[in-house]
Length: 206
Image (tube, rainbow, N blue to C red; front, side, top):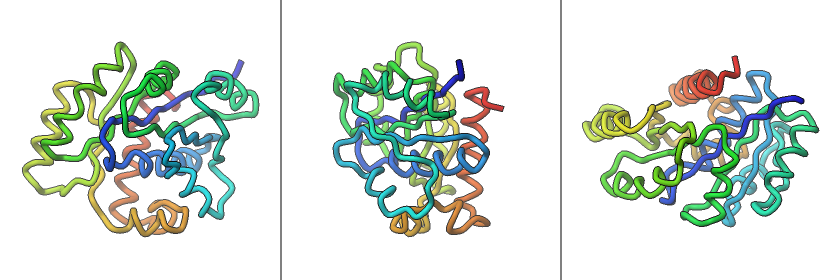
């Protein structure tokens, strides 16, 4: 039976870029030749709202609920999905734990700030033996705190990438697009493509 890979993006702290990462990884993965399904399990519905502004038909946005997620994943696999990327709420709940249980890879976006570091430990404690990695988001690349954050995180797990704080992420989101589509030669696009390459290698999808 065809293998489908599930990536879950999670952090109990809001405003760290979970939805942005889901959208950008989904579009980058689709562009690399995979069939991608996005799932929005966040009651705020930010990923679905982004998708509703989107003109392109791929990646698809799949209807799913936490209660039926295991069956939904099987259904998406039978319909040809290679990769499922799941956005989660900014809270640690039983629902989030159930979503993590289904993951092949958990991605934890973290802003370079002391508040985000302090909020991270509870999320990491849920992962058990799950494969995971950090992504430093909304970073000022030359700032000392970004280097300190990256070094600190690398002591607990792999840092999959660093994404700078640039306005083109917000501008592309307004159009239901990503920076790889609106500004394909930008530094932001280079960062996203590098992140996707690392995620793909981590998942052994090459």
